[in-house]
Image 1: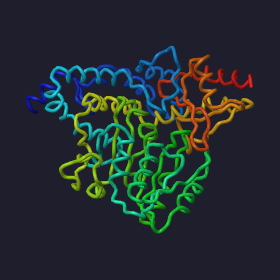
Image 2: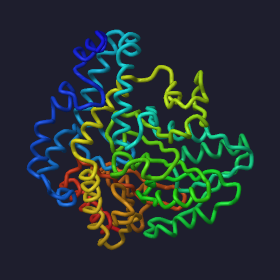
Image 3: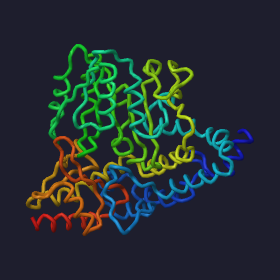
Image 4: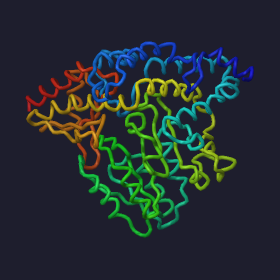
Length: 431
């Protein structure tokens, strides 16, 4: 180990992306997390999902404001205390001498972090680029693909607006053909979804854009079946994993796609402004970087990281979010958040005048659920939930989707969901 590297570790007390003895997770949580895991060895994740004693330990690791009930974790999730403290330490270190500590010290932490993210995603480190969010990751691919005038791309009208706008811009500027399939969610029929994509394909189709979890209502799309269908036809696939990575228990190569982008500040609970891009190794050389690079046609994944000056503290604090996520366990985390979603959604589904816009089947949804009340617009329901009950949600009005989106996380308490159920019951009764 170099003197510079050793000095950094002593100074910061951190090593990004590892379970080293000196990292913050071990300082703050290792003992208590080890205890709750040991006491439940061999217990199925589905059973632990309803174990409030287990989850109370994890809830205490967050610093959320008790004066409001935050149920808009689909937008951005709060970071646990360990991630906040890592970010604070790195910020303080950077400000002791920014150009030195950022470029000569912290920059060394990117490779260990890349390895940690690759391990989490089941990918090769040489396929992982670290950036700022899923919009940046997916735009890198959207603008980096070597499409020609007349080539077709198929997405859906329910995809994320930034992705739709990017494809529309390429279509306007370069003459590619951007087509959109329209869905009426919830759908509990994989084959119907696959057929909709397949029926839109022509001999000119080059790529399918697939949103893994529809951000508006939480519909889980049958990505593996769609990508398999596309591969048989020689068509590439780009997957938007903004709302799936860090929530659903999967490995990226299992999806069968060619390109994948994610935001890490959602369900992984990394610092706001952190993201990741995965590109299959053999596809890297043929993809142009979004920001200029001296070797734009190389097969080095790092060519997608030439962003200029960025927040090194944010980037390095991602490592503690991965530590925290792994300590919970991906399967347990998914089961718990699905349990929380179904806890409130199944209860309000029995209230007259209340409609769910999301399936309760774990094959088709996990965290996000849309709800509406007859006689109220989405904005009115969202406003009433906050004004009287201090429950923070978000109203959705996009294409054929009009509802309030509600999204719990691992720190969400049952008593808060009970208040949500009471609130919707009272609001619906007045209509």
